[in-house]
Each structure stands twice: as C-alpha cells, then as structure tokens.
Image (cartoon, rainbow, N blue to C red; front, side):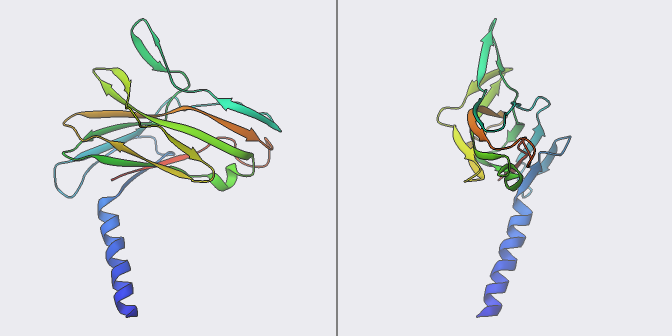
Amino acid sequence: MKKRTWMFILGMLVIMATTAISFASTASTGTSIVVNGSGNTMTATIATALPTWTPTANRAGDIPGGTTTTGGTTAFTNGYLFDIDVKSNTDVFATLYLANSPALSKSYSYLNLNVGVYKVVDGVLTEVPDSAELLSLTNGYVTLQLSGAADGKYKIALKGGSFYCLSTTAGALAPQFTIDLR
C-alpha cells in the first residue's frame, strides 16, 4: 500500500512539472512555452510600472487602483502586475500568489488586494466581467480564468485595496507576486 502511495505522489509530481508554467515577480523578461506539444502558448511578462502605495505605521489606508480614460485612452491609475499573452484553444487559469506573505504579516495587520483581469484588444483595455478576486494575507492566492483565443492578451492589475500598517520597519512593505499559468 505504501508503495502505491509513493508511486501516485511521484506520478502527480511528474504531471505537474510537465504542465505547470510559473513566472516569478523577480524575473525581468517573459517566457514563452509550448504546452504538451499542442501548439498552445502562454507568455507572462512582469509589468514595468508596478502598483505602489505609502503606508504609515499604526494607520489604515487605501490602495489606489483601477483605470482612468482620457481622450479615448484607458490607462491604469497605479500600475499593474503582469502582461499575459495566451494563444490557446481552451481557457487558461492564472493563479496569482502572494510570494512574501510571512514578511508582509510583520508589517500589516491586514492587506486586502482587489485583483482584476483586463482584456487588451487593439490596444484598448476592457475589464473582464466578474473577474475581480480578493487576494489577502489570509488566502495567499487567487485563481483567475482567461478565455482561450487565437490572440488573447490580458493584463492582471490591482483594482484597489486596503491595509492596516503595524510597522514600517518590521518586515516587507511591498508585496511580491508569482503567477502560475495552467
């Protein structure tokens, strides 16, 4: 019985290693990968303008986010996290992880980030309906669904959020993100 269990675990690890694609927030360039030889490709690139905010010790605060439209051009008000380029026949699931939550928990009593998916068509941003998910120190990750298409370009962004800062010196103040595409 124990041998079967270990074989099952080993088999699952092999399957996960060959089908999962992860991109860490510390990477500087995107990676393009063909999944299972099917011709489906997924590319994730870290945004050049990441969201920022300035916490003050022993204070609650809001994290700006969302988009603004000026002269017909829509732009993010506080940066965004990832560019995702999906060429797939099926839907892709993007799991966004809060990579440094132990360090963040030393600085924040709570950190709630409202994450949204935006589709890019001909350079125009449109929020994907019902795509908003809450990422916090408690849950640590959210899974977002990206519709498969011949040319699916998406941006993962913060729509806003809130926090209570305990200390500006005890731990990390800026979250680090990792994204996993499946």
